[in-house]
Length: 241
Ligand code: NDP
Image (tube, rainbow, N blue to C red):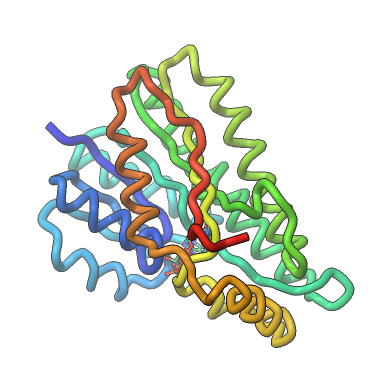
């Protein structure tokens, strides 16, 4: 029997594509994000699915949604910590509120989700947590200081948690994508940072990664036998520098 898959940030972009690929393979799903209507629209096409409006920075809300889904479908076997924000800007001008929101979502959200499912996975000695990082978790990009800090954070915490839980047969995985067409840029408030980003994309022929290919990668990683952990995949458009 297929076990429960929990996906954060499933209301758009990578998360929605990851949801589609697991639903097509018959997995029961819990889809989380703040925009309930978008989650409901997506879930309307799936058979075994629960959705909940959850802010991943709110531990209580997050935990309650996971426990409800587990009461119906059984324990979580895969958590995809995908929810994230990229608010570009340079440090001399950007609002500290943007840094706070981004670090809370991208780092605290991942820690919250991890703790919520980890004890159950340790007890069962089975389970996978896949964290959506970024190439910005491995190298720097102009106008990305706080985002880079958050994604380097995801890389660091993921590898630490992997080491801590390897003996319990729990897999911690990371995917580090390059630039892709999603809603990610729609929240950027700095016009100059957006112009710089567009110029960078244009310099690569405007080509970016199809979110469907990220979803395929996540599925491939999860489908490996439990005793094999693909710890990290970097995936980007071939033309990305
Ligand atoms: P989208 O903006 O399309 O998706 C982001 C998702 O995160 C949305 O579903 C959004 O849902 C959710 N989200 C944001 N904040 C919260 C929150 N506080 N609580 C719950 N859900 C939240 O962008 P992507 O699909 O591109 O982003 C997914 C992940 O991939 C992010 O972690 C991002 O950093 C990473 N990434 C993206 C790249 C790209 O170029 N697109 C490249 C590398 C990594 P809602 O608004 O409904 O809450």
